[in-house]
Image (cartoon, rainbow, N blue to C red):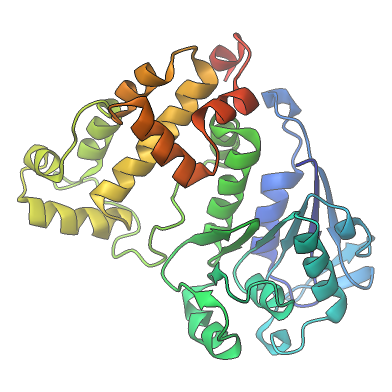
Length: 323
């Protein structure tokens, strides 16, 4: 992925637009990450208004989007959901037909839906708009609870900060785990919130009192090679397994088992990038037990084998220390 077009239309949301600029538009060559050719495009070049009353001067029409490796669709105002610009729809359909990436943030999913490319697929949008999307587009399998959904090469995300999670998810696939972590550190955001995590978390910021589960989560990350059962984690938290599981989901938006499974995959990604260890050793270090189990889980989550991932993202000998 080398070229990125971000489509804006009148009434677009500045924050979500800024998410795309931050993820794909900044110069990160000093971090050893190749820059994208990032351009903001619109159906009618010139002044494009935001929903907050100020405007942006956009010089590029949609031509570049017809060739871009990634087409990002910024949120569109509610009054346009039933009347999406056909020129934008045509760009989105063309991107899907030529197997390019398409990523929408928040209500940008309505523009993707209007193009017809989400019919028969899973998708999401901001939880406040999910019911509306279900009514308007009954052929789409709308999941109102998750941060983002990838179906093929189409990624739809929930509102605001979930757009960052979706962008980092795509960057991990295109650049590898360590590069995505570097970008996340520059953004000062967590490097990984899994797409299946809930949009609405009872306590979005875990407290730092003696009842916080953060020390248990940190200990688990340092001991992924162990058999980390809910019972063992609950014992360290001085809770019953049932109370621990309930508290963990309230704090982290997912179950302990799902969180551990994803953390093991991320650790395997790092080791494949930065070490020369064989798959059996990596499987043991990550808690998968065997290379066969590692391959099965890795391929299911990332869509490629550990060997293929290493061939694509293995760092030069000096890169891990530099990162």
